[in-house]
Image (spheres, one colour):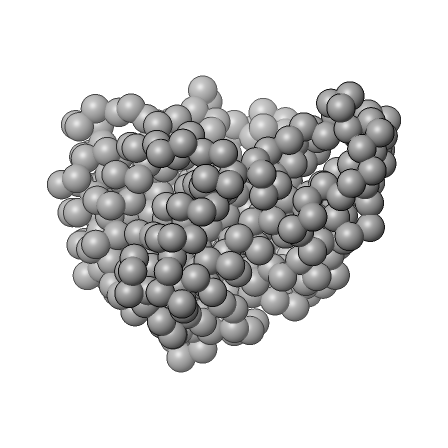
Length: 376
């Protein structure tokens, strides 16, 4: 598709990390980038204007949840998800595969697809590669994901191998069902657990199918950091240099930096907004819990190195008051901050890449944030 392209602008001489411009039907955005998660066509507590102000490039929305509420036909009738939520920027939808994984107690996986129960009312649901793509075609995001099985960790070699082969068959079926190839970029998702040969096989077979972009799936599902980074290493060397690489479900500072160092372009996670609603804040000196009594009379900004609305206009004492009183404004302000923190992290990473000093930058941030040499 002509209106979707990754333009690599620089590769860091020190690290091999890359930066560039991702061109989409709804605008061009710089990578590497962090994408806020807007599960139900909304980033919790944030308006579309808030999202623009924090420098967001792409918003992720959730196929499974929009399928149940309000229904893909309603979104299509509105003119697509951007019109529905009044956000005129690039968007991405996942496939629903991770939600099926999270509903493991009720799911039954067959070659045709997956039968499981709605988390809302318990009714039986069926999702197949074709159905997932049909829903995403109607939702209308710029980037859509193949339907895959996100396996648990750990899993046996035999189970993982069978799952990879099914994921590849499902990827081809989804590709065949895709009716909007002209304006929606379908990504292939590489699975394979912690098995190097299976990751290689899955990546190489997906590359043969010539998807516009590729995702690294099956990470952040309970494995340790070293295992996660190994999974990325096993995968990324087999992915095309000229197409976007998306590490799914990753939002911790060290994981983003380690992913960028390995050549990843895109990240998403509910982490920054989820922890914000409980008073946990990402700052340049590490995470803090604003609920603690120590902040009750602390009139300094949450993070003096942050340029978000929360840090420029409010003190820790005020935020402590809001969160202790369960005020909705606390969730909004802390979500704005945490998202801006991660987006600003990727902005600074792009500068470091362009200056050929990304490894130095990564080490500086991890030390300042309080991680040890293992990244914990």
